Length: 379
Ligand code: UD2
Ligand code: MN
Figure (tube, rainbow, N blue to C red):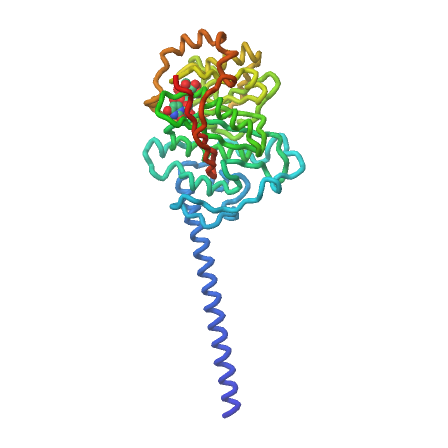
């Protein structure tokens, strides 16, 4: 009996240990399951928003890092704060130069504005979702460059802005993927007019240039002055200044104009130049209040003051989409634009960077961009 008892007890203990082990493993499995589900639900949620983007899954948009291993923690989409760790810029840059042609380029980006035009509340992604999708961004929409090579392409993207939140969300969602696949080191500056006066794009761009030029994080050499509603359709369209005596006009083929260079389009939309080139022109004129001709004015400065040529990349894939939009209330046609343009050369040497009197009221560094609030000098 005693032996039997001993055997019986050993069996019971064994069963108890097995039960405990199964319970413990089960618990862990459940926890892992919840974690994956949470991530998946976040990923699912974002993938839902790119449902019309047939070309690729969302994680491709982010470049090489697959979504699942991105280092996001506790992303709560409803909260305003997103906490994610990222390595410091110093440890991120390798010491071998990046290849001239990035191996990450995919070609067509699959730009899709459909949601906006159909009031689909789920599209474009929210700022939080965009931040969550690009976890290697450092605050202020700054990307220190790839971590496996050193890039010389340091780019400041400067966007004139007011009351175009939805356009900005589209823009940020696409541009971060494009620039990271191009292995640029870049930062996005949104220069917002902080009043309800008539819009003055030239003063915003000049203010954005001066602020970005003094950026101590990466001293950008290349500046793109970029409409918020105009998005590149292909990541082979390089955001890389030409320097020398060539200024780069990227957006010469836009869907709105049937992809033709047309209708008096001079250098509007997306134009890139180096710091030296922009300073030689004395920047944009500050005198254009309202819609129209500030781009024609800087076109004249490029040609006659800079003596630069305007390079428009010829490749077929150079195409942009512009989000359809009505005229903005506070950006009426500038009735003085023709007179101002006719006198551009009389003003050039004293109307621009050297006469700017705008006021920066505040600067806010969000995860996906730096917002510079500016009051232009009133008319
Ligand atoms: C054309 C030019 C644009 C500019 C404009 C005349 C092209 C491709 N684009 O665009 O560069 O020269 O004519 O001024 O030729 N914005 C706001 N809020 C406003 C008003 C303007 O954010 O209330 C910004 C925004 O970045 C916008 C840009 O200014 O993309 C140009 O304004 P637009 O889009 O109304 O001008 P559009 O499309 O006629
Ligand atoms: Mn526009």
